Amino acid sequence: MKAVHDDRQARHDPQFFLVNGVPRPSPEQPERIARLRAAAERAGCSFVAPQDHGMGPLAAVHSAEYLHFLRTIHARWQHIDGAGEEVIPNIHPAARTDGYPRSAVGQAGYHQADTACPIGAHTWDSAYWSAQSAVTAADLVLGGEGAVYALSRPPGHHAYADLAGGFCFLNNSAIAAERLLRAGRRPAVLDVDVHHGNGTQGIFYARGDVLTVSVHADPERFYPFFWGYPQERGEGAGRGANLNLALPRGTGDEDYLRALDTALARIDAFGCDALVVALGLDAHVNDPFQGLAVTTEGFRRIARAIAGAGLPTVWVQEGGYLSDDLGPNLAAAIEGAQG
Image 1: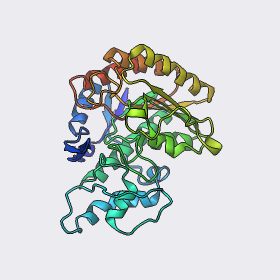
Image 2: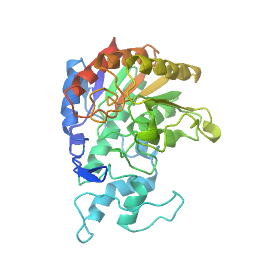
Image 3: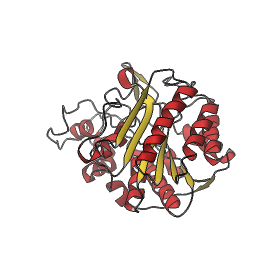
Image 4: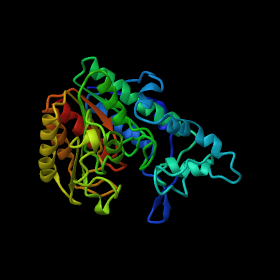
């Protein structure tokens, strides 16, 4: 399998993460890249660098206002007397329709949903190349590759059109799906991360041209808390084009695979001819977030089932955090996708 990644994606090195009111080191560390890339290569992936497709594919999904914010906010933040090294919000609007301030502090609150997406000096550069990796992977699939893996880091599925959150800045999976759509394909995004793909859902929620499906831990007591419920089916033209399969905490391989069967049946019914898989590995039993209990062999079976749909597929890396199982989980998934 071909794979895409750029070394500049490691420059983003977030330091701040808030857990139950206590500052902690961020689990979204650059070391994830080294472990994931080594595992992908062991599984037979051949890496290429992404092409620079410019801002167009990003602006097809994200607002120009938001992209300008991401590109400029860190430099602006440094002009604030006594400001910290990272951009971290401390106030938020009550609604997206509230006023849009000129203040850097106010705009941080508008465009950053939580404290899990601090913006440092190199965040934009890393997020940009993470997105370009996903675009290049989509183009390789459009060019005839049956499956391509985008080692996109930082991840993206919690990012809305104008809102960062949950370690995510640019929605790589949505950007890849939009790329496929504009080339004439009818794509679905299948999110298998332990957390609901709320940003991806939000981007396509009122549209009927991209199907979004997410299999995740029940958000009643798990991030992102406010999205990911079964009744969220889409709105307007998108009614029926969103499917959430929320699983009880601790769900293991067999029940997960049954939910995946439901997801794949919906993708088939939608008439998809291309697929983007938001590949989170944090559903693993030993992942630090402890949401689900999928095994390493479970990831092999999940990927094999997805590949069995027979659709050209862009596999976009989402979550999966540091543990001794991270690399083996990716290797198993890639082997399942290839086998």
